Structures are given as structure tokens and as C-alpha cells.
Amino acid sequence: MSAATRTVRIGALDLEFEVLAGDTIIGPAIERGAWADHETALFRAHLAPGATAVDLGANVGWFAVQAILAGAQVHAFEPAPEIAAVCERNVQRALARRPGRAHVHRVAAGAERATARIALASDNFGDNRVLEAGAARPGDMGAGREVEIQVAPVDEFVQGPVRMLKIDTQGSEWLALQGARKLLAASPVLGLLIEFWPYALRGASGRQLLEHLSALGFTLGKATNAPYPMSVDRILAQVERRDRVKGGIDLYGARGTSFHVLGAKARLHGFVRSLKED
Image: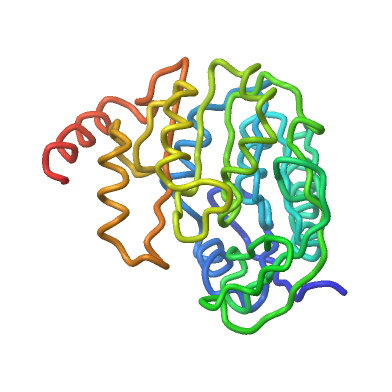
């Protein structure tokens, strides 16, 4: 079975890009010309020709394509079979524009090898969640399909060093990190984008995840157009004031390199924001 799609032209990339028909979030944004602008800028700022990027939860391949167009090698992980097929086609379009190396792995990043079920969203096709063994479909997702997928550690597929790691796995972030310990150890200079969503997080608490990243040497902040370094307590306080189900945030991190990769103006803006925000 293949997913219904449509192909749109992304002028800024000079590229045809395939999106999922019926998607209410990612597809319409890409059709308007871009997706996750701030995260995209941070992602590309850490890449240069010859570098390696890893995209966990690649969906239709927006970030994987960004890596290819930046001249970087990319490993994209997308477990939902129909979505992975779209990702593969978008990667091939990018490789036709800028030849390089790209690998799409049809597995979910996890702590160990396993077979699992993934709950597929009915409208926001970026919100597909791997289910614990025997767990019911999350109530906030509503009705929808579930399919069987493979789960595997990133360390089985990628060897470091890598320069950029994106983890947007709808609650599997902690488990993905546990399966990438060798990769992390081999990548002392590393940029990070990670979804922080305590409501859906499996395997650890939100505080445990943040403290783990801090212990790994990452300076953390919100993934905005002007990020500023934030303590674990400050991140948790901001998340706790949000809606429990919908209140996740995207975090940016860096270690072994400057946190401020978007330039002096963004750094100044971030400093001002750090004084105004709680």
C-alpha cells in the first residue's frame, strides 16, 4: 500500500518535493515554501561539505534533503513504511541536484533490536508514535491505523564522528539516545536538535533526559531564531506552564563548538530574550 502524495515546488531549494496528501501540519508548511524554519537554520549551520548528519524521525525527508544540499552525508531513520518511501524519493531528488551519499533506514531508533507497533496519526502525519509492548493507542491521537515496524540502535548503522544529530521521534528520544552511545562518544563536536515532550516520553522522565544531555556536555536552549543557553530547571519550568499534552518544545544543543551559530545579531537577540523570559 502506498500513501497518497502530491509534489510541490520549493523555490528556495530549487527542488520538487513530495508531501503526504491529507497531512495538516508538515505538508502544508512545505507547500508554502518551508518547514521548521528555525530548526532548519540551526541544522544547516552545523553542516559543511563532507560532514555527516543523522536524522532520527525523518518523516518525508525535509532535514535529510537539507543535509544533502549542504554537501553532507546523511543517515535518515523513518520507520513508517509508506512515509519512508516518500522520504526515499525526496532524497533521490536531492541527490540528483547535488550528488552525494544518503541512506534511508526503515527502522525506528531505539535502545535495542525489537519488533514493535507504531500508531499512525490520522491527520498530523508527523505525530506517529512507537508503542510499548501491549500498550494501547494514546487517547489523544484518536482513531487510526497501527502497523508493525522494526526498532534498532543507531550504532548498528552509523559510526561517528557526526556533526549534526536530529531526534524527533514522538516520545522515543531517550531510547534513541541509549542506542547511539558509541556514536555520541565518537562525536565530540556535535550539534543537536531534539524534541522535548515529557507527556509522550518513554523510558525516562523529562528531567532525566535533560540532565543526561547536560552530562554529555551539551549546552541547551530552545530551538528558535535566537536561542540562548538555558538550565535544566529553566527548561522544565517553561514546559510545565504549557498544556500537558500539546506543550512540548524543540530544543537545540551544541557541544565542542559554539552554541551561537546563527551570528552576532541572533546572539544579541537571544541575550535580550534571556532577560525577559522566566
